Length: 577
Image (cartoon, rainbow, N blue to C red; front, side, top):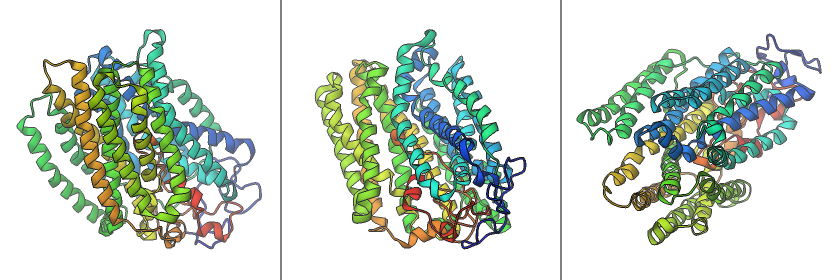
């Protein structure tokens, strides 16, 4: 395993069997094909992996806008609607860390292409789904395939480009994240509104087919293979126990309302902590046995990590709840078209993207966690303003009356989602930085799934109690009730932020970029609601992987000096997180 100061090509080279140009143009012994990819090939490879990240971002946000159309066409119940969205998030979250490790072990290009192929097939199944059950199953498959595809994206970028080009490349990656946040709802709105060939909502999934096929063909030709020589082992037992514990809560929470809240649902939710305790015990045994647990439990002894994970979990839940409820309110409560609903959300996305950039570049270095706390308060003000407007105007609420609240909510979200990862990981030891980042970003997806389940109580439960009233007014009232839940969650987030460091700790930069130890999960581009759902990248094993500790096992790219092996630029680390 190469040290942080090893010259290029020293140490264990990444496996590049079958990779063109493995010796590199400079003829540096031991350098891998991916790190030495030159000219047009690597830029085409970049286009392919960025397209995959864009597909994932869009598919995470595109469905909400088409929910009313899906309901009319398939007869889906509100419970089924929740699973159509939550199934994707849950499958993605459960398989995220395992997908990255599979890439480290079996080859990142291989897993990327497998994931993209599976994602494309799952999209086709979504598009031809004959009933809600088939659509839910296809969405779960889509999320599972995204868990194979997305973790490879940043890893492939990292081993394909030398350090001096990565600033520009990660800038492009950040632009794709922002573009996906804005385009997801708009693409969904346009495709649904146009009703292409009378297919109604189905084109929102079928559009992935030509993109996926082209990505597979180009990826096979232009993406070079890479592996981590000393990747961590799989923890399938831990993944199964974690999924079971989560389902024992989410299934009765989501389906209980429609079934009349049966006793078995409460028993299942009460027994979930027992399964979770079994998971913790299994993880401890796994750590003693081979040092490759799914979750590094020692992380939860760190106050800042626990607080940051709490913020991420709560924020994910609020995002899942808000965006589903808000979309249903605009179309079912206010009677708007999908296109008008999609366009109404543009101020939110733009404000979120702008605030995220300003917070990281200008505000956090000067004011520290106060910026995130200000973001929570600004977002809270936006929620309260929305509640006031909806309560006053009811079903007559207009887009321009909604805009000030959306600007505040989007701006507040941007001030939190961009810097939260670095703040939460500031005290994590270098040998666990990769694991911490993988767990941290999985938390937001789990939160989103919980938020969608919570809508059974916060939104649909209110609708059930409004029988006999004007259905449109009932939807608006249910939305207001849900927003009070969002407001309470933001207060929790504001309080949790007090547990984070007051100011950025410069020592953490060396820890994140140049510590020793083994890390197999890297940071992800922030994925919270429509504000930019992040692609996650498992550690490619290079010494200067953004967002991870060093020592994953792959050699330094050609042209990388000792300093490249020790530190990662602030811009790279911010974009990766």
